[in-house]
Image (cartoon, rainbow, N blue to C red; front, top):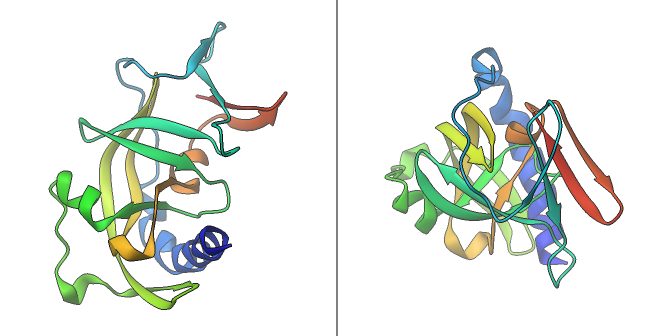
Length: 166
């Protein structure tokens, strides 16, 4: 239940943060990279993400060249990063930068908006992606939200798998 509340809270927080970055939205394709997800043949670049043992869709992504694991969350408005994974990316928001409020099962948590230069999932690449950094105790998994997904040509759940296409 807690992850659902965190996801909902991220959606609310993103509603406050995403408009600031809306003018910067514009996907630019880059060279393909490898991913554990299966590739789908065809003109568009696509990947198929199977469900994990918990029924979630997990992907490895390169964020500004560094690999992180994400749970795909179509209910999250933005990418959400744990503070420790953000630190691995060189993102160290100061206390005064935690300006977004996110409601979780443990109450209100402050999050710091940030911008990611490039997010790559398999052959799919999106540049200048809005994200939030949350304290480690507020988020168990990094979330791949709509600030990435909405910039794809499509994302679709079909036959028990998630299809991402650019």
